[in-house]
Length: 67
Image 1 (tube, rainbow, N blue to C red):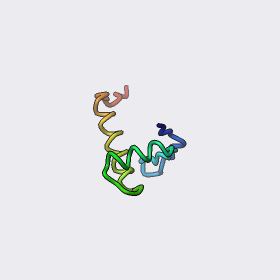
Image 2: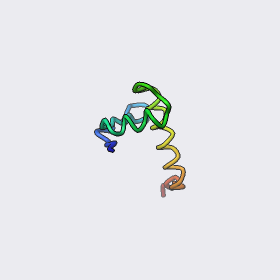
Image 3: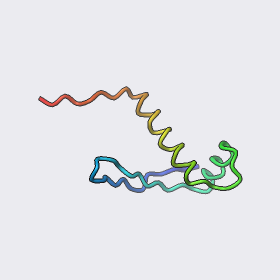
Image 4: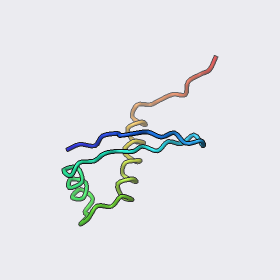
């Protein structure tokens, strides 16, 4: 099972778009865990953003203080 970051595009407004490559095994796992009969890009994007946010929260990142 594999999910791989293919590209990160930084937008002018400071946000970023993350492009990922997902293999078929991951898609099947995701559909099963989400109770889906077919792939849902919208559901995956919501799940991915939540997973990234939870991961970053666990790191307890602090703002960089400029001197």
